[in-house]
Figure (tube, rainbow, N blue to C red):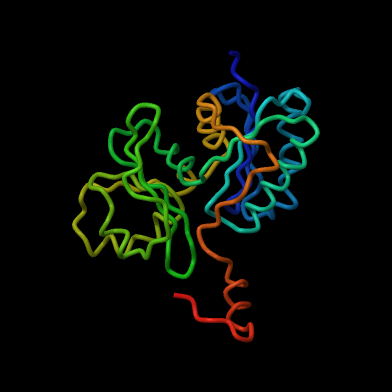
Length: 239
């Protein structure tokens, strides 16, 4: 079966990026300016990507999108945009976990890789994998962790990738070194090229869905929802 022409979208963090791949081979990538709103940059970046590659959107055979955790607004924009674009052409989609894609920035590591994103409120989104072959094995479940508690659970000799790596500095300083290595931005940040590479592998394993069935993985409830429920008459406290 020929490898599909795949477009990947990364909108989970403040820097939007899009990439075009043939199977696992990156053909083009466009990165929007840092901290520019996804609502303003995603479609222009995608247009620049396809024009630069001389490809029409009708030629796209598969889509991959970062589904979270990450920015609630960014995730919604990325998934909603993909749904709109894919609807008319019925190209299948792949839901790519943001932290798993981020871990690809560490390259081919023999030691565990930990993907980290800032979850705000003194917490981080994190997950860890041993990079054995082409199907990494999870050794720390994806979740929200307080920095100190996370450091206690980090595997020895792990590579820490992502913007939240710098947030662990104080907590790491209070513990033995244990061979931990940091890859902070700009090298250690989510990118559509990693979303596409993982998406291509998932596609090859049949892990595809109809675009309209994609849903984001927020990791936590929005603060606005928490406040709304707290102010609702008769609302019970949450455990």
